[in-house]
Amino acid sequence: MSEIIIKAGGFIFEAKFENNAPNTVSAFRDVMPFSGKLIHVRWSGEAVWIPLGDKSFGVDYENHTTYPSLGQVLLYPGGISETEILISYGSVNFASKMGQLAGNHFMTFTSGIENLKSLGNATLWQGSQDIEIR
Image 1 (cartoon, rainbow, N blue to C red):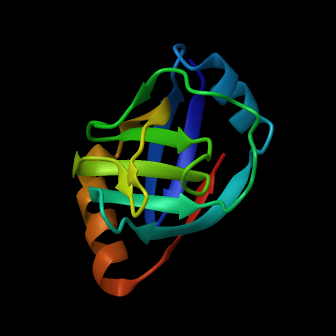
Image 2: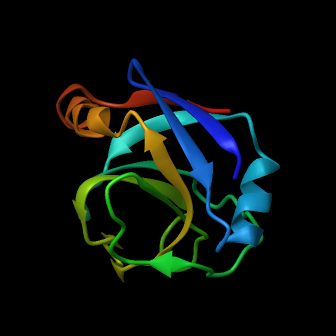
């Protein structure tokens, strides 16, 4: 397992890659270090997301879920909605205005999890937050 450092909204987290999503992990490693903007989800519940438009990671579904748990990170590879990364900080039912979605669970937070809800609330009430993944 690889150690990953995530800086977002003034918090520092650690995460690990998931073995059950090797193609997604490989594709994401190719874009690291990664930086972007977190915004709050519109339909899914307690999560933040990074919209990636039509960016292609060249992966299909693997280790995918619609109901990520606290601290799980999904990559939605695109299709009926835009490509995105979703980070769960609570109860999530992954969806878009086009309907139900499933994303590849490729990363999981391993430390700082107690700050995810604060990050989510800051994103909801204060607006977008910078994120850097190394």
